[in-house]
Image 1 (tube, rainbow, N blue to C red):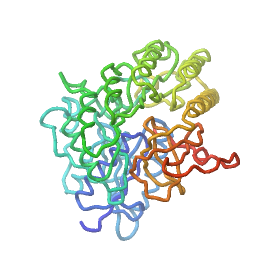
Image 2 (image 1 turned 180 degrees about the vertical axis):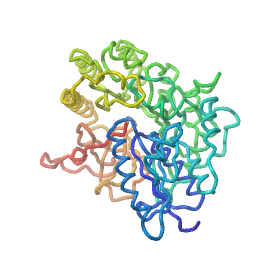
Image 3 (image 1 turned 90 degrees about the vertical axis):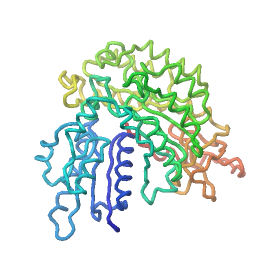
Image 4 (image 1 turned 180 degrees about the horizontal axis):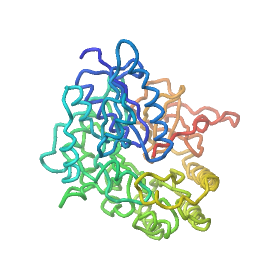
Length: 471
């Protein structure tokens, strides 16, 4: 298969990014090599998202654009659709809708494409039975020699990687389509995860983010299973690994044990993602979140008490069915009070098969826009204020990549930092004195370089570039 190429296009969350990495790894093992040019690839896979209608529409548009490739003379690529648009269901309706797609892959599952390449059918019935009947923590599923092979262009250059530790979700929030598309929660074995992390570190990765739809539910799906804090303690001992993060957490499962582990392990970063979604108890109840505003407020105080200086990120949905102006103001006031470092904001979008999709979407689009803008402006002020506390401090930055003539990396608290340095700093831990702060990023100078003269006329580099958030 020498010279064979593949192209994977990914949209959506960090879990999708990790799923694409796993699929790419399996293809690399078979002698395929990544190409950034879809038209030139032997295999093209679109990894899809349905959390928002906009994302689903983008995938549909891109699938349509690939149709002519199946009718051209000469080489015709294998086309695959992966991810939440496929879900854990029979893909027959999708085959009818997109007959030029050769293979459909459920989330996190490269099996159908690998079977297609081998010339036989994938055992879908066995797969669906497995995810409905038992956890991946079952000893029969403990592949302790898991190896992830990064694409050639990323080996030695990819600094931060995502590692799924629990698939699916059982929580069934009324707005969320994930349980219907990714199935029930299944925790991976500790041996499999540690082996994967070691293989990534061997290829140059220095930071891993542990992923789950509810990451702090890790191990809860099996009796006496390991917990997130057990896994982090093992990963903290992996030689060559510098940093560990985890997302996304749920307030109900953020235990004192997890917080104590974050506080005590030097490689686990002071950065917690714990969505509140709304600042009104009635709305939270309709969302089926399982906690109150009061409990969330207590949790934020607990996090700050146990992990001083930690950065806390949250998610917010505006315009949920039935959300009144007063209930929205409850969300606004909660964010103003708690002053969290970052809020990932989204307008409610009805998703098929969810309970909320059956309710009247009674908040007008223009009102959703207004509420989103109000929170965005609030968080601009809050984030700006928090980031000013970093001015003239020295921060340890893990450098991820070069970006428009500057190095780009992150602090332990996940603040984005830009700095100039003629040396190759990719993958280095650099002490940077912060000389400028903005709402979205910081700028600074390595402590072993002289400080430049300050000029108020210089435009802030980082804040000229809005930073995309995948959620």
